[in-house]
Amino acid sequence: MSQPTTPSPRPPASVASLRPLVIASGVLILLFCLPLYNLVRFALGSSLYSHIVLIPFISLYLARQRLSAEPDSSQPNRPLSIAFFAIGLTAIISWGLYTLQGNSLARENSLALTTFSFLAFFSGVCTWLMGRQTLRRLLFPLAFLLFMVPMPIFLEAWTETILQHGSASVAHALFSVAGTSVFVDGLVFQLSTITIQVAPECSGIHSSLALLITSIVAGPLFLRSPTRRTLLALSVLPLALLRNGLRVFIIGELCVRIGPEMINSYIHRHGGPVFFILSLIPFSLLLLLLVRSERKARLKP
Image 1: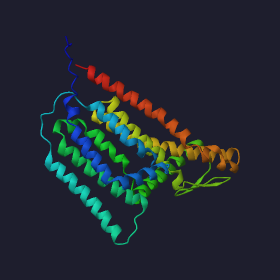
Image 2: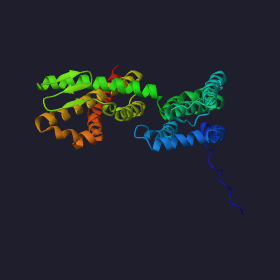
Image 3: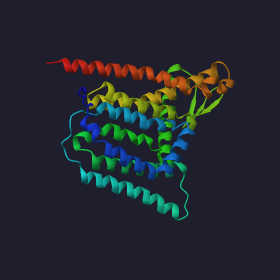
């Protein structure tokens, strides 16, 4: 007698419905294989954008956490999908026309256009194939993919300028509190033994971007309130300015108290990761405070 066979478990309905999305995404990746290859090469050779290669994996993990076994009976938002396709087409056509005219785009600007176009097409595919309920659950992982786009040069320079001047203001305040004699002219600090300038390399843009990504990932994982998530993300800017200003202040104090040769010390040349770890302490305390306040608010009648 043959034993009855046990039917294999069916995959969740929402997972099964993603099969067309996987196929369409594979075709889209093939179409953009050269720009994506250039993006990966650029990211692996960049200290500022090394996080790009990790973003798709983090987004995939976040998406899996939000998938539901319940079937999605809602209809796709086709008008929104067409809008995404139009945006992606506009970006890639603009890049193509500018390139065909013999103009040369900076590498960051070129990759920003092609990567943004790819993500717009990918969002259009997701919106075309997924129901509104599933799309709503996966909205955050999809939006998180924007961190794959390198900043255009003008935006990177603007961000560095804000961080430079903000860090210089914090450092000036710390010197004043410490009673250190200093003459400040914009980004230049004239101390008794040395002149220090807050250069673009001292802006801490890489550490600030890493902390911003950390805050955006940590928010939905630990907090439910959109207000508290926003507050956690907004805390990155003051923490970045305090971190960079403290670094300038410590280097200046070392040059005054020990000698001007401290400008070439480890804390100046390679101290970025150390100060980034230090900035995680107040960030973690703020996150803990927000989690506790949210729990207390939830327990109130």
